[in-house]
Image (cartoon, rainbow, N blue to C red; front, side, top):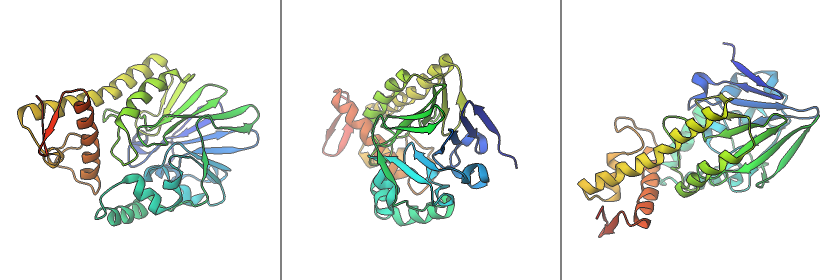
Length: 298
């Protein structure tokens, strides 16, 4: 099946299944006069031919299994990863710390990502910092803007000319932000949702769901709806605690992120991490208190 491609100046976006809905993603390639760069390598990368295999450079906007799914096809390409995520790209041990899941979950998680995402670590991955830039030749340049929250090293990659921003897993989906791993941060994600508005972009490319957005007004509306899920989750937790004081594990069992009828290896761990962060935010605002392991709203 032919892969749909959207082209914007030096940027080509190869859309994964269902516009890159997880577990797939959208593959971005940026061609300069001297260098072909790939942003991430989602599952769709495994269905591509020479247009991917010619990549000289892979810049990961962040590290998760679905963004490394095609790296095994590019053993000679340089791989660059933000310094806060680079350990997760270099080894399974680093990725396991990045996830932060319970020890009993991790072996199954590794087996799943090796089977379903072709996971292979890249010990050769090189770190980059906020503001790093890559000159691809012919006036084409990529600049990294550190935008943490989803992971501690999540970055937006801006391509010039054209102001084309790959915003990664600020994916503008109806699911909303994901911050369920050990290096994720609700507080940082809130700041990122404000900061991303200031990036001088004229088009925005997401890893998943939306693909390419070319109107700023549309982008801002989608971003606001995406961010509103943070407040909706927090309000749901507060309302539940007001009606029923609960332990953390009781809240995890209730589910505020994932539908209760669905189960994946990491859902409980991610749910726990998300809820813990919202409880800390509620407590910090004086809206919830913990007494002998049970949380309530005064």
